[in-house]
Each structure stands twice: as C-alpha cells, then as structure tokens.
Length: 534
Ligand code: TNX
Image 1 (tube, rainbow, N blue to C red):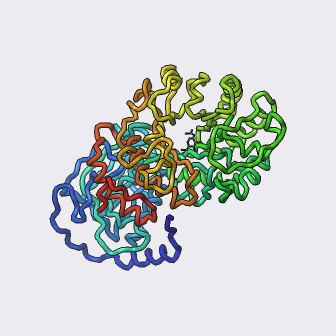
Image 2: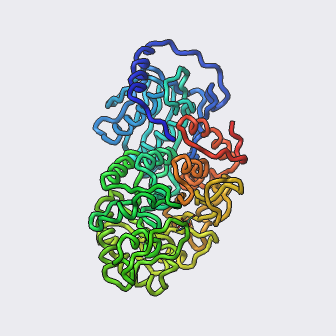
Image 3: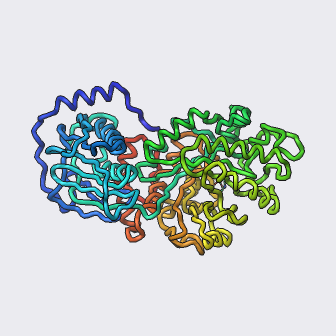
C-alpha cells in the first residue's frame, strides 16, 4: 500500500527545511567516473534514456537554498515544478520554493518549455552541472518525463516519506531522451474485482514514474459493471453491487464524480484514461441486471466464477443498440481522453455473422460521439476503419486479420499475453495469478522486441505497448503491485527505450536499484531470483 503524507509531516519538514538554511556544505569524497559518492549514476534510469553522457566534474548537490525555477508564464511548467517540489520536500525537508523567473540564481532546478530539437512532443533534455539541473522540453508531457528521470537520479532515499539528513547529489552530465512509441499503457481490470478510486490513483502514480502515459480500465465484464450510467441506472448499483467480485467477494463501482476525479488526477500525472466496455460478450453483469438485454427476455443469474465466452448481447434486438449507444454516449461525455475501447474479445457465444452485424452498427457510434476506437484484436476481422486500434492479446505472434488491418493502415497496440500479461504467474510457486498463457518471469516480460512480436506488424504499424492486469485473482492493491512489479517496468522500457539500449544484464542491474525506491513507496513487489536485489 502506498503511504500517504500527513499534513503534520509536511509542516514539520518545511520547518526543518528553514532551520538548515545556511548549513555549510558537507565535504564530498572523490568519485569514480560518472558516479556520485553515493554510487548513483546518470545511466541508472528506467526506462533507459536514448542518450546519457556522464560528466563526473559536474555533479549537482541539492541544498537548502535551491530554488525550483519555472518558466515565467507557463502554467505547465509551474504545475510540474510544484509536483517536483512536493516530491523533493518530503524527504529533504528543504523549502524548495517554486519561482517563475528567467534566472535561477546560484542553485536551481530549472524547468523550461520551449523549442528543443530532437526530443519531439514527449521527450526532454536534462543537463546537470554544479549550479543546478535544467530540464527542457517542447511540451508539459516532456517536462514531466524529465522530472521522472531526475527523480531516479536522486538517491533512493528521496522516495522516503520522512525528512532525512544526507547529501542529495545528482550525477553530472546530460541526457537527451524521447520515446520509441508514443503510447505506453497499463490496464487494470475493475470488473473481476473492483479496485477503489484511491487504489487506482495510487496505481496511476506508480506507472507514471516509468513514463507510462495511458491507463486502460476494463470497466465491465460478466461479473460486474463498474461505472455509473444514468440512462440505465441499475447497471452500477446492481450490476456492480456488493458481492459482484469473483467468488462473490467485494463489489463496487466508480460514480461519475469518482470517474471525473480520477481523470483529473491522471491528467496531473500526464496519464490518459482509456475506458473499456466489453461487448458483445463478457456482458453477463448487464444482462443479469436488465432482462430486456436478453433474447428470451429473461435475466440470467449473476455470475462470479471466472469462465469466459458464455454471454452475448442479443444481436437481433433493437433495445441492444439503444443500450450500447446510451452507454457509449455517456462514457464519451465523461471521458476527456481521445480513446474509447469497446472490447470485442472472446465472443464465443456470438456467431461470426452476428459479431459482424453487431460491430457494423456499434463501431460508428464511437466516432459519432467524438472518440477514437480501440478494441481487442478480434475487431480486426470486421474491417474497422483505419482509425481503429486493434489490441493484440494472443500468444502465438500471428494473427492474419490484425496483419491485414496493419497493411490497410491501422495502428496496432501490442499486449501479447505470454509477454505482457501481468496476471500470469511468475513461476509455479506464485500464489496469485493465472497461467493459461504460461509463466512469465521478469526476463520473459523484458526479452522481446515489439517490432518483431507480431507477424506482418512492423515498427511503423505499432501504436505502442500495454501491460494488462486482469484481476480474477487480485483483490487488493498489494496483490496488484505484486504482479505488476517488477514486470511492468520491463514493458515500460520496451515502450520507451530504443532497441539499441536493450540489454538484459544492464536492465537487471538497473532494476535492482529500483527496489529501495519501491520499499520507500510502499510498493509490494516480487523479489525474482533472476535479479540480484542489493
Ligand atoms: C483473457 S485476453 C481475457 C480476459 C481474462 C484474461 C485472464 C482477453 C482480451 N480476455 O477475459 O480476464 O484472459 O488472463
């Protein structure tokens, strides 16, 4: 569980920060090339940066008098500056005022938005020298990514919830960095077990530090319906009521107010929420709540087992399309992000003809309400428009319909189940998780190349990568974290870092250095025997 900061702690840290102003600098011993006295290096970052040039003569030491300078007039720089200040204050106790100014003074972390060559709209440039750190980017997203890198360049104690006396040194040099793929995503399944607003927010914080910029939420399935829909008012309170989690455990849903709060929170972490309503299968929660959604007009009983492929909306009935359009309209209206995911997987209880008939009517609704469409790769079979994004989830690296869609111009989202499914067990001893796609150890989740993962879908056809986490067996945030960490960081690196940096031994070493950060952050993680945890 993530630790939350108390107001008392924050005030205490602020007071202490004031009292240490003017303390003489502690002597720093000589260091090995590119490494500070505390052993941290400019290259100890996940995801690996495109280019990092260490300079041992240019280490920066944060001091009680350091200011966080943000570009005057830039609201985005100011917000990112406040975010960074809050992060650094809790462990350093320094004041770290955020000032809008063109000059940083003798010690400053500067956040600048402006024309920065080479880094595109998500990248950044980071320069460390003795008088400060400068992060430059073309956008607020880029600046935020630069701040996540800087965060990892501080000693792991920076993540501690309490003020600590120590030197806070950043290794000198410069980094130029930008993503391989624009879209890097995690998915949480709220349908099989509901996860609360606070838990989802905590997960947003956890993924954002590895530059994951989308969070896909699986909001409805056979077991439960997890989002308020006003035009079908029983969906959430009944379809997502008490006992609607797997094995009858838990339940719950996000109200529209919760969902708005989550989207705003995610935006503050530069994460875009992608909501999914799965259809025409995986719909028992809706069909057991509303009898009219069934061809025979009879509501089936609610189900909390983990079988898949038995439910289907009634394809021949008009009320089905009224239902679907109402849901898509309301979901689109409450979603600030550009995408809406309509599922479409494992529709084994729908004939292929009915599937095509259904999708032909439903796919245009997404554009009608102003959103871009995502669906599991089965939707590629029905020739969706080239703006649609099929999400590949299978295990055999081959799907003719998805390859054909890519040839027509569709971008594909990759989440091969045998590599990126965080709900697969690590090995036969893992208590949580499933194993239908095989065991996935830390190395398996890292050792693949998106550009060659799916036959006929090359680098230029790939929108990005996603690490889905289905929650049949996961009830708590601790469970979620245990399955996500440390595999999620591998997927994050595959999505961000250039293939040229890909190296298991090097990654493994950097991964081990994340562990003390997770301990400070209260993240429950799996200590894989493949990694030499220090
Ligand atoms: C397959 S992959 C599913 C989900 C399950 C998951 C469990 C996909 C699109 N569907 O319904 O939760 O396996 O790993």
